[in-house]
Amino acid sequence: MNDLRREFDQAAEDVKQLARRPDNDTLLRLYALYKQATEGDIHADQPGFFDFVGTAKHEAWNQLRGLGAEEAMRRYVALVRQLLA
Image (tube, helix red, strand yellow):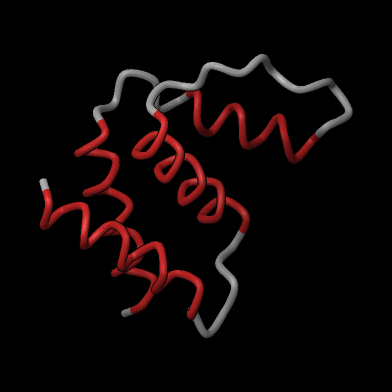
């Protein structure tokens, strides 16, 4: 897991250096995978109806419920690599 954690941490830094900002769907996937990898299943209440960004983030993260941290890290690293390619 230490190698995976290093790759994950590096990917988290690399994503900040992207030449172009990813589309909103990709940003939500990155957010959800990162949160699932670092915090596990979502534990917060759903944001209010008019908090559109918060609701989108909540739903994206909630869709990953049950996904293990290691798998979330692998998916995050793979997505960042794809964006960097």
